[in-house]
Image 1 (cartoon, one colour):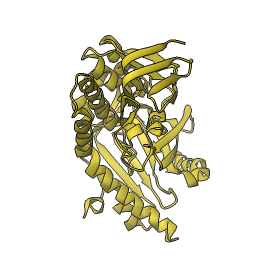
Image 2 (tube, helix red, strand yellow; image 1 turned 120 degrees about the horizontal axis):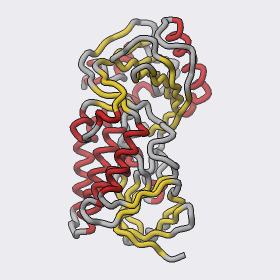
Image 3 (cartoon, helix red, strand yellow; image 1 turned 45 degrees about the horizontal axis):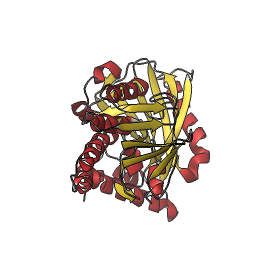
Image 4 (cartoon, rainbow, N blue to C red; image 1 turned 135 degrees about the vertical axis):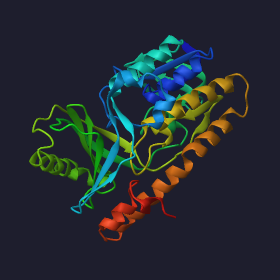
Length: 356
């Protein structure tokens, strides 16, 4: 089969990949972006909450917003709840959100192909797609998630992953807060109830070693919320996925004469404590697309500039989150179950988390 040649190849068409495609194509570069999913943003593997900060980066969020969020309520063990009143954000429809991002990329000239994933990358920089097509690009952007094929090819692999399970349930009371459930039983993760109008995303994440507890732990939270008359007993659907929680794995590499950039989950930009990653995906995707375009235009410092900007934006927060995560997991390793005070130190709503 003949070799397809493009300026920029993007693996993954989630928020990071779609934003990268739009940024690169808008500068006149030839862009091929591929994703193994059949449709943008589906199946949903996300709790669908985005912080208010993302609103500054994206336009048109009103069209994909289920509802706004004002507060965060954190429940630690059986010690009652703590409320953070200044925690604004939005619950979005990820399918509509991702579709809008892809459509924008296509409008500015990106060739976006679904049902066509990246099969492998050679050390010479040749990409082999699942339909047998071979692609040669000057720049390759890996936006292909926690188990990035692009990242693996350049030795940048997410080593720490959290397993998640989520269900869609009926919400019996109007709610404007994200509810967080923390417990020593939920190792390396937490439970959540995120409202979206008359429905809610009820989910839970744990370290891979505790995957066998995922379903019963989530069911315990569900049963409690049913008893409290907060949610109905119906379940309208299940989803799940992996979240990288090991921090930044790297932003770039080289395969043959092709430069490689990583964005979003593939780069390890998801917060190791909260698992939040949409905002970082959107912003890093745009920056990766701009840097890829600059590289092709002959800007030799484009890769270094991309790395510096990502490190400046996310480095300190990722380092703190990874430290807090490491500290609490170390207690399990030492067979000392975390107390409520330990748990509070590992969650963003408490001043202990932000202390030196």
